[in-house]
Amino acid sequence: MKTRWIPFLLIAATGVPVSLQAQSPERFALTAPQVARALSGNGIQTTGEQVSLLTRVVATEPSPKLDILSVEMLGKGPLPEHSVRARVKLACDLPGKCLPFYAIVRTPQTVAGSTILASSVHGFGNPRVNANSEVTMKVGTYATLLMDDQRAHIQVAVISLENGMVGHRIRVATPDHKQTYVGEVVNARLLRGSF
Image 1: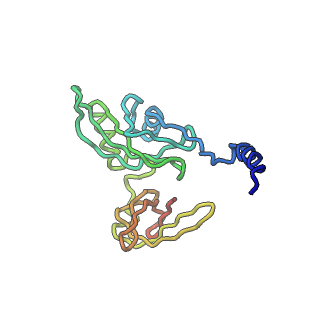
Image 2: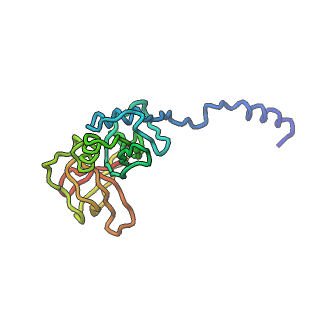
Image 3: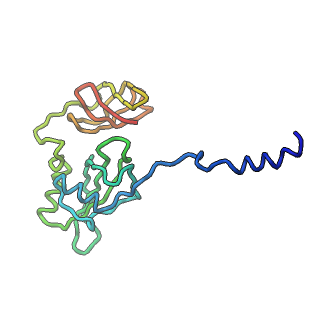
């Protein structure tokens, strides 16, 4: 290459627009008051001060609808008033909006606060779970997990690792137990998931 072309190539190289770089999608941080509103909407009356997020949680939209996946009682807190604490697992209603995450909820140790959190452990606080519902998919059931995207349709043979009712999200694994997934129970032999 001749040396007289080098200045032109340098000018051309520095003139490449920056817009060719990959743009990252916008992310919105979820806050404790947003989680408290979701909990209150599902029967667990809380305020933003009673909710602690364990990590920074982001979503692809500013105020996604949140679903309660599980509630686990942690016992009495270290505070003088001995508040009741629970670890709540939440996720966005639509797959892909946010990853599932945990929050700690504190309520004063009163009959009302303890009862609401305790009943949530058994699913009564979640409107998607009916107290009279029967288990649709039992542990050890061989089933099919369907995962759909705009670009792909995947069917995976799985075994359920938990009991689940229609609309419940449960853990499942491949028959060799090398991969685990979370899927929503559709019927006794079918689950829907996302990737």
